[in-house]
Length: 250
Image (cartoon, rainbow, N blue to C red; front, side, top):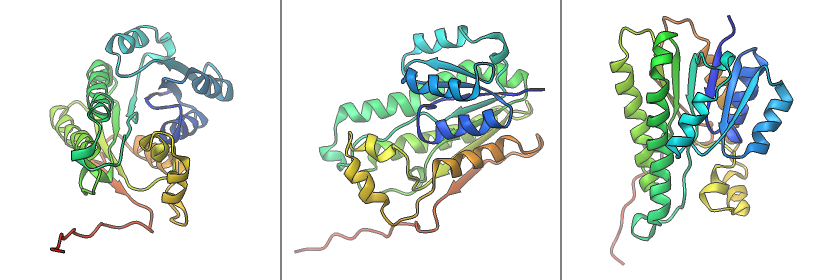
């Protein structure tokens, strides 16, 4: 039986790589994102019978509901929800950060994620499916400028554990994926378009790639149904845990 994956944030990074990985393996994929041209490129690459493009802003609850109602029949039986859409905005410490950026992160990383998850839960329970929520190492390890981004990802990790508890006995698997440094458009978005800052961050670091994460997600999704990965933290070998900060008198 052909399975269906519903993947958010499919226009770049982990999401786009995951669409490629699952479609290449014979899955049907609902690819969600705001940039219609990029979604169409995925349809063109894999075929309309394999990939369905759903172009909308995940923060818009009405648009989300309309997109779900518009799913073609072959794509309605969702077996895997990959909640990948999310972002970090800004690197300034909390006392200087943009409140607008904070609200955007909360609306995207938290509100949109729970709204979509709740909408698809009945189908996932019916099909004994799986949920993979993309969190971050920032959920557990604080750093200067991480403030609300880290808070939203901590929510994702804890929400996933509580989902797992609530779904006990349904056969639905729930996994939190917590990646560390991976080179995608993440830092360009975070710095509001500063490609030089992104290049400097990843230079010489041998970060993880979107394909590394997509392969991990595919492995999780295709494990035998009696196995559940509760949470999985990944870092490149070049990255480890930050040290404590100490402020000293001048």
